[in-house]
Each structure stands twice: as C-alpha cells, then as structure tokens.
Amino acid sequence: MKSSPIKILVTGGYGFIGSAVIRRLIGSSDYSVINLDKLTYAGNLDSLQDISNNQRYSDARVDICDSQALSLIFEKFQPTHIMHLAAESHVDRSIDGPAEFIDTNIIGTFNLLEVARNYFNNLNTAEQKKFRFHHISTDEVYGDLEGTDDLFTEKTSYSPSSPYSASKAASDHLVRAWGRTYGLPIIITNCSNNYGPYHFPEKLIPHVILNAFQGKAIPIYGNGLQIRDWLYVEDHAKALIRVVIEGKTGETYNIGGHNEKTNLEVVELICSILEELAPNKPNGIDKYKDLITFVKDRPGHDKRYAIDASKIERELGWVPDETFDSGLRKTVKWYLDNSAWWERVLSGKYRLERLGG
Image (cartoon, rainbow, N blue to C red):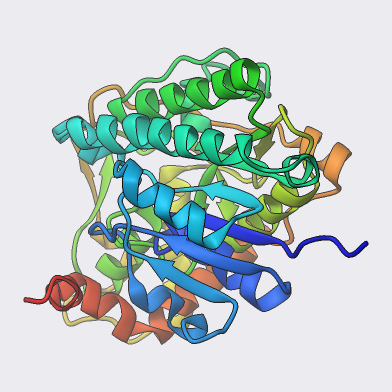
C-alpha cells in the first residue's frame, strides 16, 4: 500500500530560518509545503521569490493567533507534518515592547497546538502515526553559562533572561504539555544563534556587514566579550528537516554550530573579510575595524551560550557542513552581491509595497 504524500505546514516561512527551510524543502525533496505567515516587519516575500511559482509550494497570510483561520488551513491542506517557526525573536524589541512576544510566542503557539490537536484527533490510525508537530525554539531558554567549559544539553534547566526568551520557554512548556497530556506527537529543537543569507538587518551579523560597508558606526554592546555559538542557517535548515522526518516523538534535540565566538571576534572577522572582498571603502574610512564603537550594554545581557549538539549527531547523524569562517565568508559575499534585497528592506519600500502603501 502506497503511503500518503508528505505535506508540511511551515509557520513563519517568510522569516529568516523559515525561508531557508522552505527553500531546502522545495529544492531537495518532493514534499508539498504551505507557508503560514502574517508577514510582520521581519517577513520578506523576496526571500522565497525563486520558489514562489513551484507547484508544490503555496502560502497563506494567516496569523497564528487566529484560530478560525488556522482551522480552515488545516482542513484544506491536510498536513502530515507541522514545523512551527513563527515567533517574535529580537531581544531588544522584546525589552522595549514585550506584549507582542506574549501574544505571538505564547498565545499563538497555544492556538496552533489546539488546532493541531483537534485535527490530529480526527485522523485515522495510519495518519496519526505519521503526523508530527515540530516546535522550533532557541538556546536562550536555558539562560546563560558562567563557566568556559559548560554546555547546554537537552536536560539543562530553563532560566530565561529576557521577555523574548521567557516567551519561548513558555511555548516550549506548552508543547511538551500537549504531548504528555493529549498525546500529540511533538518534537522540540533548540538552536544556537543563526546567521547567513536573507537575515533581517537588525541582527548582529547583517547589521555589522551593512554598517561597515556603508561607512557607518558598528555598535557593540558593553565590552563585546559575550560569547555565542554560531550556526549557519542552511545547516540549521538541514537539521530541522531531518528532525521532523526522522526524529523521535517526545524528544528534544539541541542544534549548534560548534562555533563559540565573542561578539567582538565576530565583528573583527567581518571587518577582515570586508577588507578583502570590498577594499574600496567609503570616503574617510581607513580600516573597517575603525568603525567599531562600544555602547552601553543592554539589560539582562546573557554572557555565554554554548550548545552540546552530540545527541542529534549520535541519533540522527547530523553535523554542520560549514565552519564559522566558511559560513561567514559566504554570508558577507551574499550581502555584497544582493544589495537589491537589503536596500529594499532598509529603505522601507518593501514594507510599504506589502501593506499597499
């Protein structure tokens, strides 16, 4: 008996990680994909332009806080797998305005779980065995690490520091509860900091690349010695797809890039790559690193994140393909070669067009 085709519903598919996942799903599998995204400021239609006309891809401008709209999508698309990436995700924004983070990351996840539960309960036994609800989260739920040798494992206690990480921790707890109480076949992944092409310019790496390239100050919080574990977004997308298809229900998998760097090291490496790839600097700039400016640290700034990704390597055979040097070089080159993408984002023209302005 031929099994039913895989149909994956991705929430937040116009975002940075979501778009990378969808590009890989369409480009490297025969799965059908529907993208649910309400298109906030960080969502970008241009990030999926290359696959937008593919017959296996469709999208729906749906807010995950709208249960009725979600139910209609589930009924129409009949997904076999859910990949839940929709989230408000910027720490600084969560400090300035936490309400949106509570709405999207907690209430939105609750709505999605409830719609998925009702849908799952009406599937036949074979379809239920195939169904997966994959919740994509962050290592920031664990808080930070004091020592230099400790690593976040799947058993690390939660200790979130910001409104963003607290809202993601809450969503993780909801997903686990729906798995344990209602039998929903859930999987959770917690990832380290992502970087790569199509990253919204407010985040550290694209912000540094574009500020330096344009001769603007490069701001670094505090002393710049905060440590992050960096994961190239294409490697992350490969890991997420492997988890949703091959991962064991009820399990959590940490996904990291094995690339611990201080923020200052990251900025200095970007400046070094730009010296090579973009030697013609803006007027008045001698060296890109001269643009580095230390600014007041943000409240509750975590000191160090570091992921132990041995479980996903051991159980699912995933390891990152990119080193930090190779991935960062690809990222810098992409921004230099794709100015039309980020210029539209920075100018605000894209948002006005999307909103009909």
